[in-house]
Length: 164
Picture 1 (cartoon, rainbow, N blue to C red):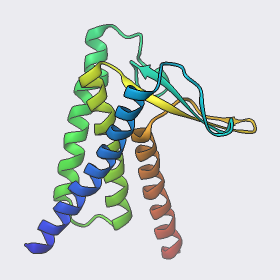
Picture 2 (picture 1 turned 120 degrees about the vertical axis):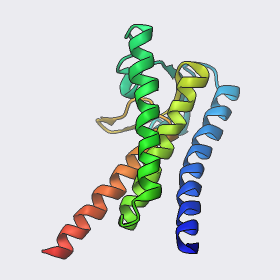
Picture 3 (picture 1 turned 90 degrees about the vertical axis):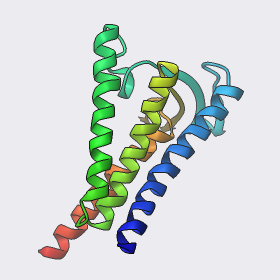
Picture 4 (picture 1 turned 180 degrees about the vertical axis):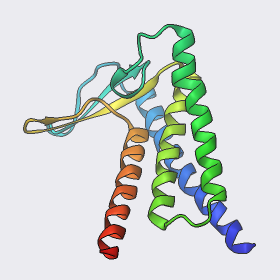
């Protein structure tokens, strides 16, 4: 019983820290950076540029009618994140990598979903450019989601290699 309680607390802490880091960073940017400013953090390789994204990843769905946008960018993600959190809390045989990875993904998803619900759009502000490699503008919730996916993928690859 104590082990399950500790596991639940750790899950909620990891999810909460991901949400917290995302929301704190977005609040700092919202209050201190003008739209489309181009602030160099590491030369031209890492820049801070505040934009509002009314769609999903890379503005996908930004031009949908309001009903469709609410359905696809708010209602369905809420359902998916609730189901994901319930899955995490009750599926006790997940590997540590899958558990942590899913916590990061759910925390990042909740961070972006909160923005969409509260502000009608998601605040994005980071941009990376190294040589010909260049990202879109993103935020820490997006980083959480990518890191979570990487943790799950690398854990699966390590597990496969160990089995073979």
